[in-house]
Length: 389
Image 1 (cartoon, rainbow, N blue to C red):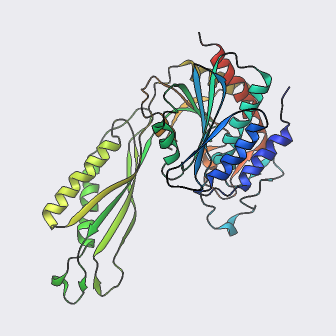
Image 2: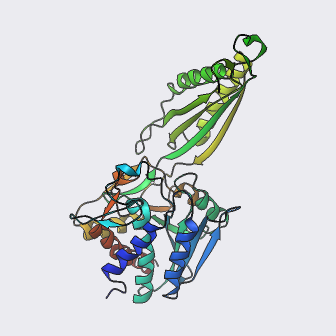
Image 3: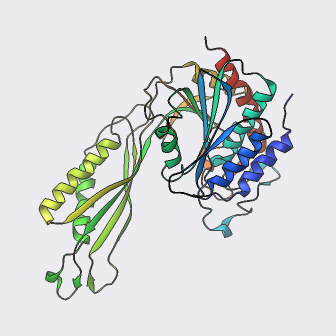
């Protein structure tokens, strides 16, 4: 018998959708979940992000001792974009005639977060966990820098974790490895002057243009393919410089986004950027700064572990299908949470929601899928721990 009815389970998701945690205000979601846990005697801890007043993680546990399984989801969501394009209020969970629940974060990933939280309640109340600990980690800032996950790693919350489940939207396949991501800001500094007297200044745009040209040429030589994750990618996505047409610009910058694999990882991209910087500064006498400001490593595991196999068994059973074990080009908090884990670590990304629904207008999750995942987690997690000898 379940503790929470289907209506109550949907109400919990609805409540946290209404909390507008767009790249902030995760503390409000954390307090909501903390209050929910308290009703069932589950202790939890709010872990504030350094220097922040509205941003925090939440850590809760059931069971005791080893082994420890970590389950995680993020509390922030991306912006809605132009709300005029939405057919539904982004921050009011709305069911349509086909059983889809619309709202920002419904797929990415408040449904996964709520499903994990509710499964803890169900497991505790059913008293099905005979040994070990399930550690629930709700994180802040995943959509930008994963600073919440980085803080949990640095504070040791992953030190004793032997398996990790992240409930990102991936209902069509169980992910056990994914690309890393990296954002780099390249700044070029010059000296302003009147455009009629350019010799009195130094145009910051010119070295930046050279930098982009040389970087693309060097990147074209990269041939580091991963069988599971494919090739790395690199794109200059934002460029700006100057503020008036008749003035020599003293500042210019470009932002780059990379998706990395173990063969050509974040460190190799940083080395590539710095080598091009040295070349440009030598040739043009420019002043270039390379600033990596988002740095999430690829997550690579062999997938040869019981946790992954058991997750597939349950997924196949609950959804009556043969789920693929696969990789993802997207990046998760596992990049930080698993920073000290090796390729034999048990990692699973499996959660409600279609991958393609993330960040979309009229984002949705099927209600039946959300409810099924709660039951799946409620059975999977204790069985995995109980069977460890």
